[in-house]
Each structure stands twice: as structure tokens, then as C-alpha cells.
Length: 90
Image (cartoon, rainbow, N blue to C red; front, side):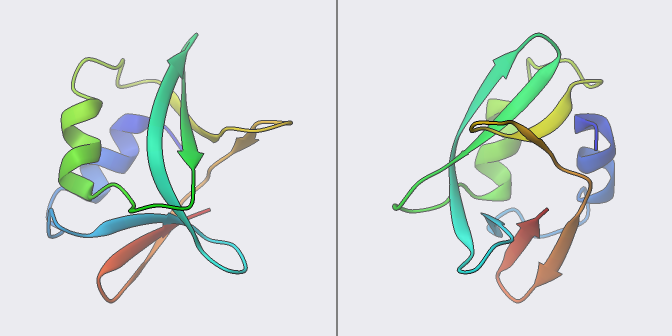
């Protein structure tokens, strides 16, 4: 999924939605890193980013950047699922 596709498809959603990686258990997305037309989402044990925080941090990122989960090896993200109070990316 590209950043522009994610932004357009989530434009009408509540900005306070929290972002998680869909896994067992779901992992909070805590940070972002840009490298060569790739936007890496970094998970961690703390509080997840909100959709509004994500948008603020990606304003200067190329809209054609692809979303990836950071980690060996990087994993491309293809979509998300909306559940109460959060988005699960996968």
C-alpha cells in the first residue's frame, strides 16, 4: 500500500484512532522511519500513534512511498482493518 492510498482511504476516519499492526497479539505502531521511497512502521511496547499523529509525521513524506513493517526482513503492508477505536494494519 502506498501512503497516498492510505491517506485517501482514511481521510474520513476519526483522527484519534490508534494504529496497530495486526498480529497475535496486536502490536502498537510507535514510530516511523523513511528510507528510499519506503515508509517503515516501527512497533514497540508503549502507546501507539494516533491517525492524527501519523498524518502529522508523514506530511513531508513522498505520497508514493510504500508502507512497510520494519524488521528483518521488512514486510510490505497491503491494507488495514477498522475495529472500534483502532486501525489494524497488515
